[in-house]
Image 1 (cartoon, one colour):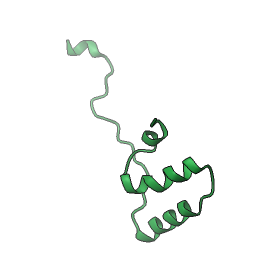
Image 2 (tube, helix red, strand yellow):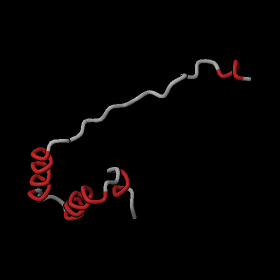
Image 3 (cartoon, rainbow, N blue to C red):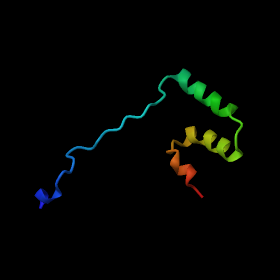
Image 4 (cartoon, rainbow, N blue to C red):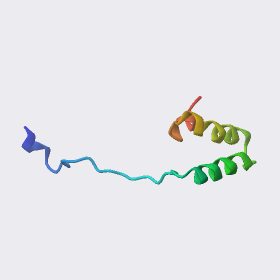
Length: 63
């Protein structure tokens, strides 16, 4: 029964993540991404992410 569940939280815990909302902040991020000169696979991933809106783990774990 429900009483057997014990200390189950009644509401989901909200987690807030920072985000860029101002066009100038987004422009600065895009400039930084295009100026990055690291590993070629990282460069490709960084340049694709803003256009496809996936979570960072999805391309990282892609095959």
